[in-house]
Amino acid sequence: MRILLTSASGLFISLSPLAGAFLQQLFGWEASFTVFVGIAAIVSLLSYVLLQDAPGLHHRASGFSSYLMMLRDTPYLAYSMQSSLAFACHFSFIVIAPLLLMGRLELTTYQFSIVFIGYGLAYIAGGVAATYLNHRVSPQAQIKAGFLLISAAGATLLIWEQLAGLSVVGVLLPMIVCTTGTTLVRPAATTQALARYSRQAGAAASLNTTLLFAWAGLTGSVVASFESTLPVGLGLLFVVASLCGWWLLACTKDDEMQRC
Image (cartoon, rainbow, N blue to C red; front, side, top):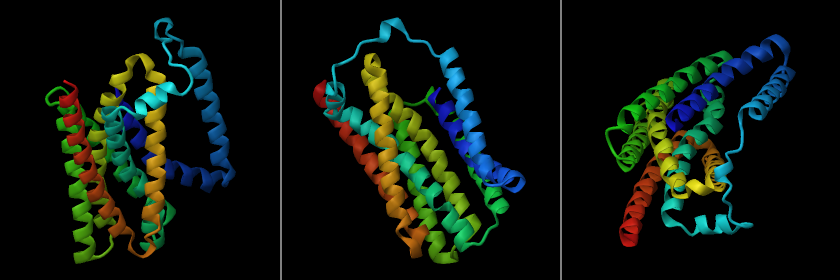
């Protein structure tokens, strides 16, 4: 289910520039905010109607003690950070994509939107790959494969930039590989993290998501600061994130072995 949700979220993010350009062209910049209100109202209504409390899942630790307990749990933190590292690679590209594609390569709004549709197809490919691997290898092997793809994307981006310079193909192809890796890592790592606290699912998911967006926002800001060398900064991020992900996976295994 998380593979499906990750793939769907990536696809909708990739389609949003085209939808935004269409709305702005027809109705002006206010149209996007009108659509936001409509979407929020629909989702709120569906949540009220469809989401019901499960009586048997009201076990909660008092105050912030549950969060403190999770922050001291090495495997939970390691898996959460693996998911955060993979998401940071995707999020950083979202942040700098307009600077690269529209600012440096001078694509129009519609050209930018078409490129993003191609980027979104990588989420579908990643979802298919993750579904195939899900029943055939361990989550740890799936995480390793994802980070391997992310590091390969980073190396390709760095080499392409040095040999051929900045181009749409030189940016899009590595990002498709990176996104496929992200779609492999995130569902597996998040599932492993949340499985440790099945009776405190809300707190575990909340902390996991907080770490995810906090780290992604910080990383995106750092990469965007490399104004003159954006592709290099992005490529280095992919390589470093992959190395950190592999190290965290090794730490997780060591910690679990010590507990056993």
